[in-house]
Length: 115
Image (tube, rainbow, N blue to C red; front, side):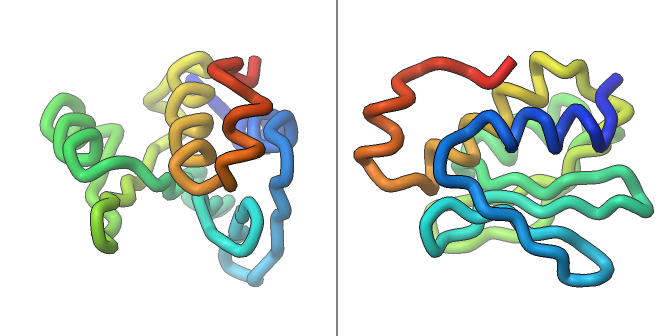
């Protein structure tokens, strides 16, 4: 089971991340592009994924993952934090960041997941 504090810690370990408070939610960007959202009242996050990954996650565990929306080649998923372990949340958050970050940051970070 993950918490809001887990998500914030994981996001904080990734280079170039900027968070902003929008009242009902927080948005997380790398460069000028968004890769995640946090809704504290519902303890959920929205994360950018590939379309295939979005569909696979929702099909496998619909009680944990929901389709949020699709945009171009990407499918966003809502993640119920109480349904994922921290290591799985780290993978999902890293993938969302990697799909969004500039190539130089991705290359510099390589495949090191936040811990």
